[in-house]
Length: 367
Image (tube, rainbow, N blue to C red):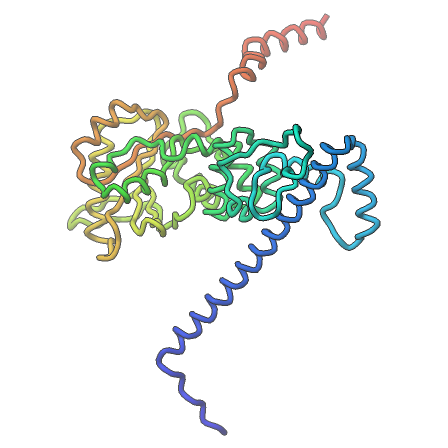
């Protein structure tokens, strides 16, 4: 038998370093492939736009182009009529990019190409997957809003399905809207980061709770759907526990939900409340944050953050209640169902109208 040579003391670190380098290289390779695909599609869109503008091509050329490309390049995917139209739309949405020569400059004098959109730098457009671009062009028309979703997609690594969910729930309107005392309890840079981490309101439409539910039922439902709950909370939240026991000598206290935020590097205490906000809720969560800081917080962790979630957060009451608290606390609402647009609400029949219709139908059948 041969003796097994002992591993060097820093072997684990070497293995970790190599593994991380491999993963980084894999990530760069995926991003590079996506970037080349975006460049290609933009370039094809630019060529088609140029020919349409200069030679008067009609829309009927695109279906023929799709068929011929399929016959000429049968092994290549992505050249259907629908996708070629997306390439043309993509170029027209973002004509002034710097990664390829500008065909617009070659157009005859007097003709105007698409106007530049300054919000979208080329590095951001290259980082967003093509399928995401297709959804964004269709569903988000406002440039500033679309830019927000692009940045969030790159920052959080949203899949296309997650992006669609965020658009449907109007995540851009809710981010950073919670009432808080972060500005006076945290350093400026830290305060802004924490504020943007929270939303108002939170949408828990994956729950099916009847009116009059108990807070414990809400808590149980959120944990049962933990993956969706974490998605709604946002990137960085790691679940620590439910009804976490805090031992204070001869008394026990229990935190509804305890999380750790990997980016903020701190514990987050969440207190769930049915109904409207009450000032005493702020004192209770301030107390919990103090105990968590003393019993669970590591010396390298940032101060614990409290988040009160209730159905009707009263901004005036919340601001007064937070004024005397020494811990960073946010207060936000939650909704179990999304509000229907006003125009849709007005087109739906009322409960009374439905009951009258059912009664009339019953009368007709009996006669």
